[in-house]
View 1 (cartoon, rainbow, N blue to C red):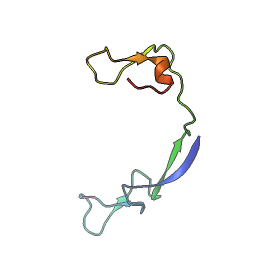
View 2 (tube, rainbow, N blue to C red):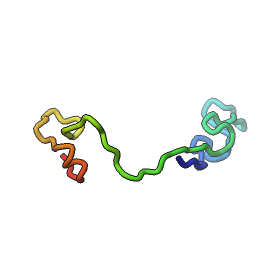
View 3 (cartoon, rainbow, N blue to C red):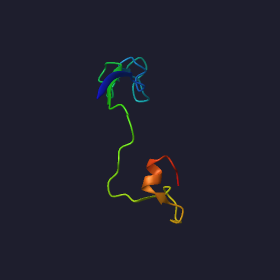
View 4 (cartoon, one colour):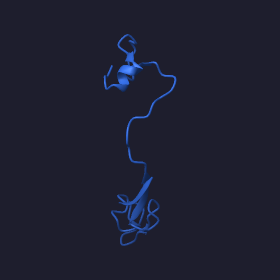
Length: 81
């Protein structure tokens, strides 16, 4: 896992949020970043697609017609339904 600091878009990196409810000239501590102006983002770098056990056939999502699927082995080789 890798952790890095990412710019907080809610407060524009200031740590202070100014929205429609704050009176003119005031702000509140940003709830997203806790007033830091950034937030920690943790992720795992992608190396290769993992295997999904129990799947034998792959279809496009949202398709009613289930005749256009392909085998899972073909999908793993890079084919798409």
